[in-house]
Amino acid sequence: MKGPWRIPIILGIIIVYALCWRAVGIAPSKFFEPQAAQRAREIFTAFVTPEILIPEVSRQAVEVPFRVPCPPGAKSTPEVSGLSPQIVMPVCASEGEIIKVEGRGFHPKSDVILRWRFAPSSQLPLGGELVAARVKANEDGSFEAQIEVRPLLAQEGGASLQAEAQWRTGRRVVSPALVKTAELMVQTIFLALMATTFATVIAIPISFLAARNIMAKGPVGTAIYYAVRWVLDLVRSIEPIVVAAIFATWVGFGPFAGVLALTVATIVSLGKLFSEVIETIDPGPVEAITATGANLLQVIRYAVVPQIVLPFLAFIIYHWDINIRISTVVGFVGGGGIGYQLKLWIDQTDYHKAGTAVWAIVAVVSVMDYVSARLREAIK
Image (cartoon, rainbow, N blue to C red; front, side, top):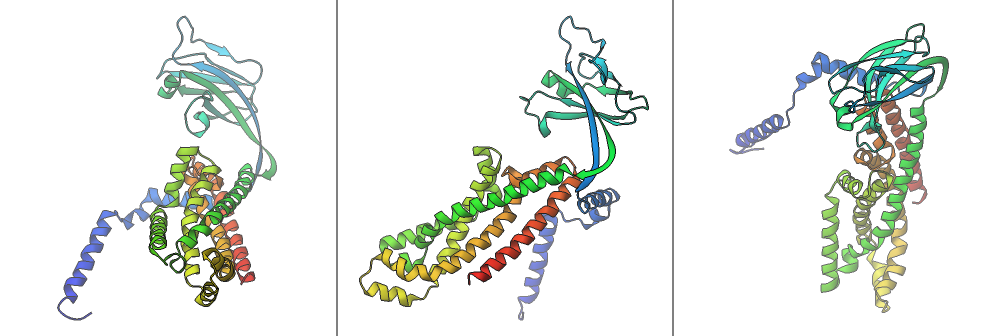
């Protein structure tokens, strides 16, 4: 860079980056804050130690209904819930009160989780449950806890209080998180396969309409060509995660929304790639077939298709690989598959379970990358 403009250009670049630095709030010092470092250490430790084999846990639970506030004429005196194990607690209370909960007949020295369980019709997240307290049972299987009647209970009119005791038996078993991860990874692979299949069926005819050497041979064909290219560019500019959020709202959370979102994203991507393959074919066979008086469909069938089959197959296989990766991100907004479960585990701070999902994604993506590479080599 020479001339009088060199210094102003360098200063301009520095100013632009200084503004960017300030606008996005880059603060390297946050990496070294004690709390941030501690959180990062906990998260990374959990992620590198996924939940695969865990000690077998036995459980016993009892559940009793609880009203907020007390109905007219009702007494908030403690009552005993059924046979062993038992909970002794009031049947009702007002918002903000502290109630005493006693347990009897639980497994000695077990970990007891007290949680509020709301009605199935409740719209609360995380399965309609709210942890109220965690206590340790004594040697005789009893415990005591003080629980606050929170505003959410008044809003819902009450809930059931469940006391669940957990204790390890010494055996190690396959983690339920690993089983769940395996099931959802299979669902993710099938999700990506269906989206790629649907998209391929739609993208192939669209790609011919978006190929200049096929369509741009007259005013009507040229108009169709430019219109199709514009639509492909427009839809391609929308991120799949945005499309997935739209479909999740439209058809509900689940893998169907993910299939629809990935199908739309794959149609525009394959449509553009296919059209570029068509535009780079050898024009000789096309001219020869055209010279015989063949129509457009005959030209495509005998001069174009033989030249594009192998490149098309390579792109389809490669895009299936890509869709497996994208589907994990699409799942974060309700597109089903392993991505949505990973989001739930992270939201619930179950980082060991989240680590199980992350490592499963890494393994599947690595295998699919290898398989797709071998398949692409085989069809060349």
